[in-house]
Length: 182
Image 1 (spheres, helix red, strand yellow):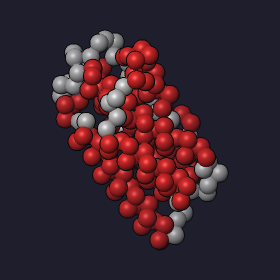
Image 2 (image 1 turned 120 degrees about the horizontal axis):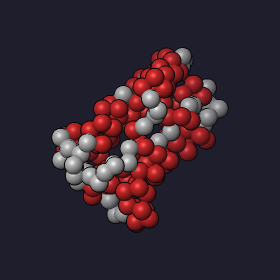
Image 3 (image 1 turned 90 degrees about the vertical axis):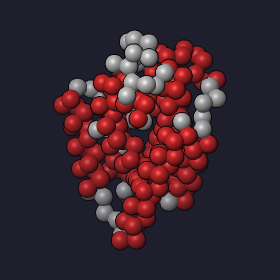
Image 4 (image 1 turned 180 degrees about the horizontal axis):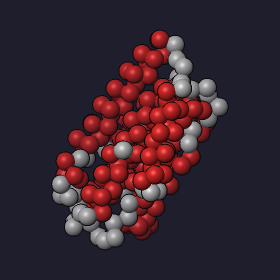
């Protein structure tokens, strides 16, 4: 992340980052779709925040058809995706934690990253930034507010609250491990 923010990340490493994020979203978004009627998850079901298609577009723009052949997936990403798949089946309300970590990060910090990545001289220009693009500032703020409102409206038992908080902490740890491996 430090390298990304300092514009020190080259195209190979940037493609690796996007490829690994795509694997995570490719686990998370279908799980959210399968559980769209779940009383907890229905409150955060907003198709406009989905990122897998945007990641695919950026990777196609950067690498053409070659990105699918990438061996850039790190073990932390595999563990992250397996965790999402496991809770999808066993305890889908915990997907809320992963949606929180990923989407609010994208809606807030991702906007800073969009500017930084766009100006990185080590990446070919124009740098594809669909992943970070939710629309103009008003639209992005509205999506973030809608997502936060959905989160605030979720009613969980104290036991489930504790489990979701623990899962959010795990999601942050998985994300940190991913960045460390990359």
